[in-house]
Image (cartoon, rainbow, N blue to C red; front, side, top):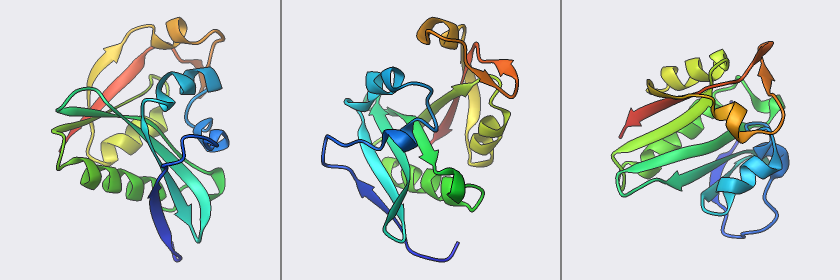
Amino acid sequence: MSGNVEVIFKTDKSNYPYDLLLLADETRDAIDKYLFDSTVYLIKYNSIEIGVFCLYEINQDIIELKNIAISQSCRNKGLGSFAIQYIKNLCKAHYKELIVGTGDSGIQQINFYEKNGFEKYSIHKNFFIENYADPIFENRKQLIDMVMLRCRL
């Protein structure tokens, strides 16, 4: 992708880009459960906000990618993989492992993470049933379990 891509740490703890965050998580309530305890980064392309990711420290060895989203118009251009590589480089000096969770019917997301060096390691049974008031469907299948993936840094 030609143009200038930059990643910016969001120091302003207001005006979060919920329009982007909601591309990766279903509700604002779900996002708010982790957003304010996460470090948030914006991805800009030619000075326009086109992506976001949130990192949440689990402990001194593990950091979780809680949300990563690229705007619809900028998908399938390598920006998601660019962001994952950026995150790995950012985190490898301080953490041993980067983890991420995604829905059990999110085949594209699981393939994306595996293509970028993650491996499945756990299933959180009934996660989407217990944590969301309304059923969530993806690929015409209700999300039930969360698939956890990890990448050693």
